[in-house]
Image (cartoon, rainbow, N blue to C red):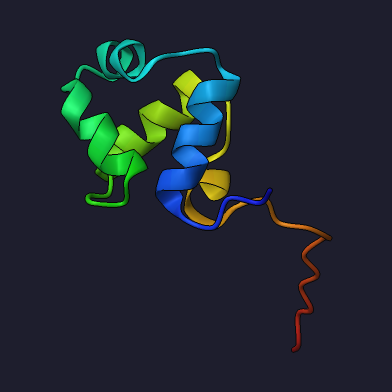
Length: 79
């Protein structure tokens, strides 16, 4: 199942990392309730928390924000 929201992607990445909400909160130096709010889409993490979270969960910030991107990006430069 593809995760459709930021919260769903955070929860999925946390579970894949084998962490509880409390363990993730400890690593991010935030309250467990903040992790719960993120996962339930009640609040979004700050940029600093998002970057640290991506490192802790071993996922890209792109994955958390947008989900898995399929295909490649093609850029055409026009002069």
